[in-house]
Figure 1 (cartoon, rainbow, N blue to C red):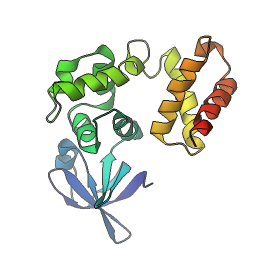
Figure 2: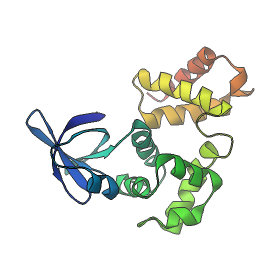
Figure 3: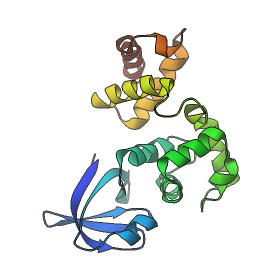
Length: 197
């Protein structure tokens, strides 16, 4: 996986940039707002996600890893592909998008080009609980979730696999997760993850 690309901007188009890395040009899809702000010749680091299809390999890039991780997480929702996920993050910053999902603001999702009622409702159905009030990053719940997520990804699991595993772990434990030692949570999570491999 190409998770980060650093280089000089060789070309800036409406929705993509080409970064020159050691003489090799990487074309990366970015938000139009970002593409309009970069200048040819400047140094730029993008956190990227590689989307592989039968007929193409495409890189999507963001200024921080949080946006990149959310891009990958959104694609875990039924009916949401890279184009839709990228459109959402081109309109809303990651924190605002998570807040919109957590509050159940379907109208805000539908304002994004290419997002209809069906897709918007599906996003809320599958992700609202994760970003609900009191469960955002930095909350008590967010701290154990973030720690467990970081541990799983450091062991080689993808963002999607880590999120799915954490949700399965939460359903399987009897007490509140913040009352359980993180090492015990990790053991439980790994048992779920390994059962799928």
